[in-house]
Length: 207
Image (cartoon, rainbow, N blue to C red):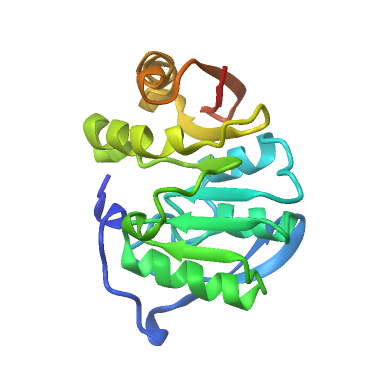
C-alpha cells in the first residue's frame, strides 16, 4: 500500500479537483478531493466506522481531527457542533488545501486547518477524533500519538477516539497506549468503544 498520501504534496490545481457527494452529520453535501491524498474517492470504511460508533460531540469546546485528510471528521465535528473550535491537522499540503476549501464551502468558519507545527502547543483539546496513519510504521505512529494524546484537556469528559483496523494491530495498539501514555499524561483509561467491519474504535481518557 503506497504511503505518499501521508506526506507533503503540492495543492491540486483546480483542474485536478474531484467533486464528491457524500453524507456528513446527517446531511448530503458536496466536497472536493484530489489524487495524492488518503481516500480521494470519499469517506473510507474506517472513518465511516468511527463516525457511526462515537458519541455525539459536545455542543462547544476545542476539538482536534488528527490526520484530517480532506476533512470528513473535522467537517462532521463542525457541522454537529457549530460553536466549537475545530483544529484539523495533517502533514500533506494537498489535504490541508482541500480541507480548507471544504470547510469554507460548507460554512464551517470555526475550523482551523494547519500543519502540526503551526498549532499552538498550549492548546488543549476536549475531544480528539482520528483515523491515525497506521502504515507510516510503529515508531512514527507512536511519536504522533505521544505528541497529541497528552494534549487532552484535564477534565472528566475529555476523550480521544481512534479507529484502527483489527488486522493492522488494533489490539496491540490498545495495550501500547495503556502502558506508554501514563508517563506523558498520568493514569489513563484505554477501552474498546466499538468493534465493527474489521475495525476497533479505541477510547482514550485520563483516569
